Image (cartoon, rainbow, N blue to C red; front, side):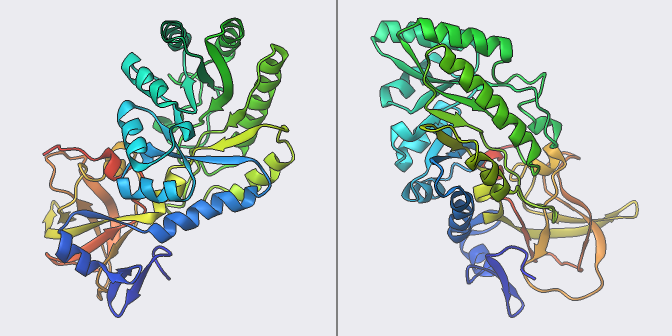
Length: 382
């Protein structure tokens, strides 16, 4: 059984789309990330095909992996981009995303970032507070422009995911509550410098259940009706991203089931926006690392590798589980080990209590499903 659809054993060596990972390690050194363009494109199709006939626009969440080659690949596929900072906006524009297919989200945009986005002509500024709306109103008046805005709603829904990843729950810093969004709609309706184009929400990340999205969709439809009663036109409804993948054998998010529901409840003349990030690139990447040492301390077995929490933060930050596979087939009875990195932190554990075949210094390991929030969360620590 393949560890990932684009990885397979040829003889006793693990290959990525036909290229032995040993050759990649020899050429580029370790640790290094390896990505599959074929898998990314397959994931794009997985999102598009169920929505055939629905006016869908996919805006890739650049935060998941802002690598230029990946962004350029998605530009060629006709995707838009979702960015949360001036830096991500720069990367998206440099990769070739048309400005009018870029959504600028984020809770803490600076005035300079907003000016840059408006100068470039982005699709919409996704506003998260009345203060930000006021800043945009001021910019519109001074520049003599009409600013396209969408409102990010916090629906107070707590999806089943890690607490750090639930962004649409009550108590989260993101978006407007119901009272706030109603005030924002009134302000937009009264101001010629602001033009409502969309309603937006984002429940969180790594969500595998359908039910929270169905509740969120109904919430968006209700707010759309309220906006249109005020004479505002909602051009798009944005369900955000957060669609989960399978890290430990669990079912990935059921895109087909979501499409089946939305198809029957899609308002005429309105565009559906989705913002997948992890779901497009998560299982399209691995982290290749080399064993440096093996050791035993107080009866516990350790494998020390050259990748650490500075390369892959998710296990330390979220307790995330990533499968590990030796690049060369190894025989021998599996032993329970902790796979740790070289960083001067006890938290620098990439995998705890894992059963792996006996490994030696110089052996290579592939850490799977690291295409999202791997390299993008890396740091210069140590």
